Length: 258
Ligand SMILES: O=C(O)CCC(=O)C(=O)O
Ligand SMILES: [Fe+2]
Image 1 (spheres, rainbow, N blue to C red):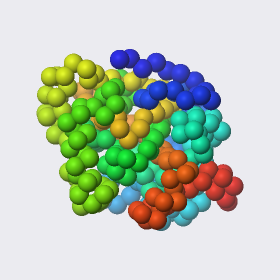
Image 2 (cartoon, rainbow, N blue to C red):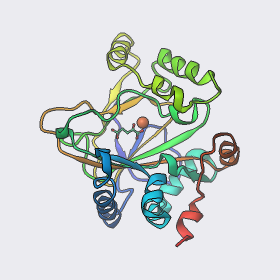
Image 3 (cartoon, rainbow, N blue to C red):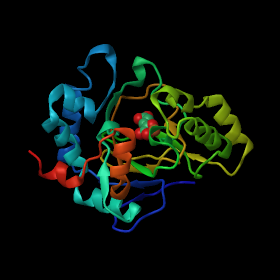
């Protein structure tokens, strides 16, 4: 399956989808500058930072500044269309990343983002590269069939079933062995993978049921900047907040605070 680049419209499209021109040039430049000054200068050589941590280290206004770029009317319209209602941002899992393949280490192996809130909570990710990805800079490879492979999804559901949701203690069990997934994909021709080529400021939109990983690296790949923007439906946010302690932000809180 090949995904084709589309414009952010106001009707829901089937996921995964790729959109062009989600962020304007000014937003891309500002987010790269922010990543250079925060993510890349942090102690311990870590290459990613959640907006929650950004707020802690550098103040809430800076975290809001980052999220405000994503809270543009066009992205919000598409997100609301997907859920059929208003949405809330999930700042504890909105993540700014810088990744240099030459420095070694892989970013993410196969997983579902359902490892964050559990398999039954609908969550959507606008994965926004700030440089062109999919050829020289590593993008995302994903399986285009939902809840696939079934055996892997079951494994995740079983892990979650232990305490009703994915906890910090069992989250590492939800990362999958690459060789096992490769075998599963090979044996079941229903499952296909794709690695979309996405221009800087475009977005790959997918949900918690779609198996994905960092694109397999090839020689000479160049560094990548990216921004993960996760959202949930407004109607589940209050309950989730009570159950999990995670905090979800309404778009107007992001847009109208100083
Ligand atoms: O940035 C990557 O390569 C992995 C990101 C990821 O797994 C995600 O956005 O859900
Ligand atoms: Fe992920």
